[in-house]
Each structure stands twice: as C-alpha cells, then as structure tokens.
Length: 584
Image (cartoon, rainbow, N blue to C red; front, side, top):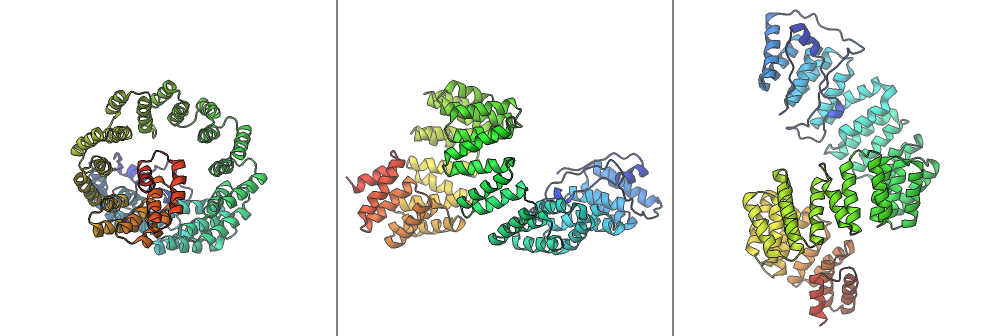
C-alpha cells in the first residue's frame, strides 16, 4: 500500500500543506471495484488557488493541535487507520476546507473510500465554489458506481467552466470508460450533454457511450454529428471509421479516403487507412499511402516505424529495413521495439547473424522476452537446438521470465517432435510452480502427445479450479475425451461449458460438433462443424467437417473441403490421416 508522507514542521505550515491535492477525476479508475479503488497520483499545489475560500475562524485549541500532530506522526509511521480517523474527526470538527481536502487525500490514498467521500462532502460544503472539491467528489461517487449521486455535481462542474466544456467532456469519457453499467453510462452522458448539443466533444462522448452500450446506430449518428461540428477532428474520424469497419471494411475505406481528400495532413487517419488497405490485400494502394506519408512526414519516427512494420507485413524487406533504421535515427520513443522488428526483418531474409545481433541488442521493455525467444528460434533454425535451450535457461532475469522461457523451450522441443523431452521440461517446471495455470495447460497439451491422459486430465482439472473462466481448459479436456470415445456425456458437458464461456470460438464450436458426431448425432454435428469452418477454415476443423460430410453421404463436398485445406496446410497430420482413412 502506498502512503503519502509529509514532514511536520509547525501547525500553520501543516494547515497550509492541507492544500495538497487529492485525486483529480481523471486519476480515478471508474471500473475499479468498490472495495478496492484504483491507484491515484496525488499532486502538490505550488501556488494558491485563484478564488481563496472563506475560511472558518479556527482557534488553535489543544485538541486540534493534538489531532494534527497525531494524524501527521501516524501517517509518517504508516499507521493509516489512526491518521485517517484523526483527519476525519478534524474535518468534522473544524469544517475547514483545507483540512477536509487533506482528509480526502489521506483517506483515498489509504483506500478508505467511504471516508474519502465523506471528507470530500465536507470539503465541498465548506467551500461550495471549489470546482476541485466538486470534481473529486463526483469522481469518487462514479468510482463507487453511484452515478445518480454524481450527476448533479458533474452538471454543476460543466456549467461552471463553459469555456472549457469540450475538454471537460473528454475527461468525462476517461472517467466513465470502464464503468460496468454501460446503459447507465449512456443515460448519464446523454443527460449531461443536453445543454451542449452544439459542442462536438459532447456529441463524441455520447457516441462513445452508445458504442459501449451496444447501440451502434446511435454511436454512428453522434460521431457523424461531432464531425459535422468539427470537420477536421482526427480522433472523431478514427472513431467513426472504426464504427464503420465493424460493419464493413469497404465503408470504412471509403470514409477514410474522403476524409483524407479534405484533410490530407491527417497523419493518424492516413496510417489507419494504409493498415486497412493492407488487411484488404490492396497492396499497390497501401504502398501509395506509405509514399504519401513519408513525403508529408519524412522525419516523423511514428510514421517511419508504421511504414516499416507495414512493409514487413508485405514482405517488402528492403523498405522495412530502411524505415526501421530511420526510426532509430530519428529517436523513436521505444528503440528496443525497433531493434526487435529489425531482428524480425533480418530473420525473414534468412540473415541469421544479423537477426541475432538485433535481437541481442534489445535491452528491456515489452519486447525483451519476445526478443530472447526469437533469438533462440534463430539458433534452432541454424541447427543449434542445444545452444538454444542453454540460452533460454540462462536468459530469465526474474522468476516470471524464467517460467516464460521454460514454456518457450518446451514449445521448441514440441515443434521439433521431441515430445518426451518437452514433457520432462514442463513436468519439472510444474513441480516448482504448481499453481501456474498457463504452465499446467501447456503440460496437459504435451501430455496428450506422450499418451499420458492421466496427467492431461489432472492438469486441466486443476486449471479449471484455478481459472474457472478459462474456456479452453474445459474444451481441451472435453475434446480429448470425445476424440477417444471416452465418457461422452461428460465430454459434452465440458464442451458445453466452454461454449457458454466463448460462444464464438471456432475451435470450441468444432469440439461441440465432434462430440455430437461421436454421439451419433450427425445432423447436429454438421451444423456446428459448418459454422466453425465458416468462421475459420483451419486444417483440423476441415478434417472434422469433411469426415462428418462423408458420414452423411456428401463425399464430393468432403473431398472439396479436404483438398482446399491441403493447399493451405499440406503437412497437417490430422488432415492427412483423415484423408488417407477415407480416400486410401
């Protein structure tokens, strides 16, 4: 628990220090549970506020002096219960806004949310003109999911600063973004926006709230209105484009193209447009956008990195390397990320020594683990499995990293077909980390490869115990039983639970089709397998789908499914075995 400590000098100085600020509305995470609010970054006021509040005539009695001393010393010693209670009693007794503000800050940082709300209420009552007090109280109420109580304070805060009402609505978005009751957030936002329907940020706030509440048409209408009020607003354009893309990539492309005609220097929109062109495999058009970006922003490191990554995706390795190097030269904010992508570029070109050099130059950051894993992968490509394993065993700096590298080592062994060694590696790790759910899942999957179904079942049942929301644990156990024609009713129940947790997952849908096939319910099986195949034409899904088509007399369609899948995955073991079984 982080406690803010101050040094006691003298009582007048302490009273002045009461101006130290508690959280601003944007500092409070509205999605944090009521019993455990989000962390806050307290700030210290370095100048007096413009409107000094009318202060009560406060006589420095022995009682007040004692409580101030007690509160501050308790805070220094980490005795937060004593400090919070003392400051609250002082706020109640004195009704001094400075002390109430200090009580709010101390209570919030000590996670006494109810006390913080009471103290903020005293602060606002003592200084009704304080916008900071009103905003903090509103933020605390939102944090506790008391939107109705927060609404009048938010209304007054917006009305008190009409010159900055647009910025206030954007802060409101951040405050409400993760609130769990999306319908209530939309209602609150609409109510707050009613007096400000000509403010683009107000309409944008409604659009975001509507999207969160699943009201796509309202979100589109409000985002469109925000753009009408502020036609060059890139943030609104990106949001509107994302809403269109959820329904149709073509509509989003058309919108971005039109927006860029009117606002050619909209860098972020052009980047998104280029990414969307790549995803639609419109490569010549995408390259044209890259050229336009580089011409307009030749030394912008964000642009050069984005063009480099898109070029890497298109296998245009010369352009990728050139732009990534330029991003380093122009001081991109995360140079380790650039070095990682340069490693990937050289690895794709089979320039393995260069790839190793770049991967090893990643000193930290989000790409550290991935760079070490890729380094080991390059060693394997050079035929140096023993070196790769030794490298991974020495690469971890912390226990979590060492665990990740163990999983990478096991995956390398699995990819090489050395299932027995991979099983042993993960088994030793499980003994040392018996409650690591992801590790147990990997152990279960490799256990299946060495026909240790007992280990698979034990491990997956523990994963389910540790992570009851982990759909793939239920699915893996259910599918394994179904594939072996074991305990089919139990298998069905497990897959049914997985499907409830992840109803659109194609592999879980495939498992449901497979267990129904094992239970001789071919028509129902075919419905699920067809749906899974439509979502994702994976080789193993194709194997199952084709087998059930064959079993229902649709042999030509089965062959068609298998042949198309073989073009994409000619070495898939399950697919090859299935085709051989039915087409010897």
